[in-house]
Length: 116
Length: 114
Image 1 (cartoon, rainbow over the protein chains, first blue to last red):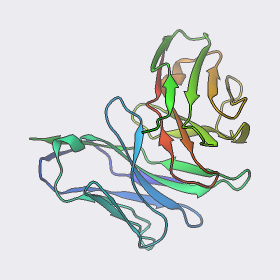
Image 2: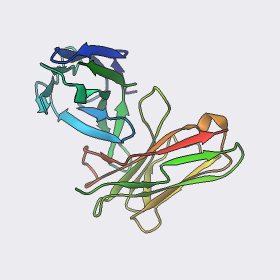
Image 3: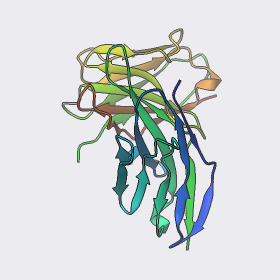
Image 4: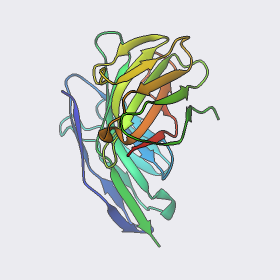
């Protein structure tokens, strides 16, 4: 079945540091890939997505490239801010064969803490 | 900006009691999802509706969990009887089209079973 593996956290960085959160996946077919972010006390929000190999998703200074050859979708940001402190989830979406729709499979999440 | 509404935000109950969660998706969103997020883990799909029909409930523990979306709009997830292992965040999400892969999540309902 489909699965997503993320690096374990927490990841603690100083403000303006470079961020990488690793994500690899296992899937049959050609899934879409996502990064969702969850701020304390809130639901998940879509951060960025990529729907096919070599696509780069980007938003709010974050970016990730869909690498089919390494089955990876690593999240990067050049300069993090305290406000980026949250839990980041990598996910893949695949079609539900019976009944239609999409099923999201999430990783376990990586907590990011950014300090001044 | 349109939101997915969920209630209650927090629920504390004793084991063997019944509990219910309500979700109102974004207006016009035909597809509705219930996810369970255990502390320290990623969300797992419990059930997916397309309008009022269930399209995937393969991970729903049907001996104690039930979900309905009678008029194809809002939805209720029920647990009876609750067990200690049911303590988790229950997330509702919706999407505009059947094949859409962008979900909008609600803030969630946090359940604690004592």
